[in-house]
Length: 140
Image 1 (tube, one colour):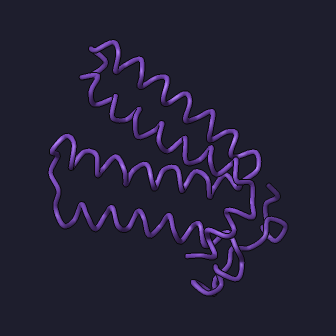
Image 2: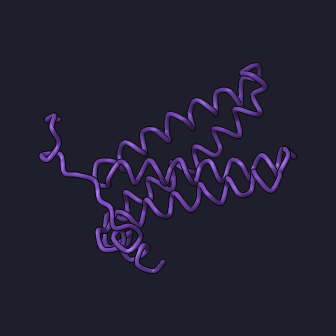
């Protein structure tokens, strides 16, 4: 775990701040989606739009310096996890063992994708690698 944190610090820390801020905006925006009652309440509806636009802008800025596949996976994975917990604890939505297992799997998938950013970490997890683009029969 400390390897992931040190790689984040060694990279562009501002880009990671953008990712974290985008996650917060996504959580607030999605919460406002619920509070808007189907876009019938003006303030939560407007906040939802502002938060979603801000989150997308921040993800685009982070994607300038970080791998977009990793950025998007972290944004989605942590956003899904957080909003699931908001639903359970704030809106009193149902929770079941299967729902909690699903949340844990989303977190695990996000962590694995982040670890795959470094070739030596990825080879520890799996020995199978994807073919390089120039080895494919169709040029991309």
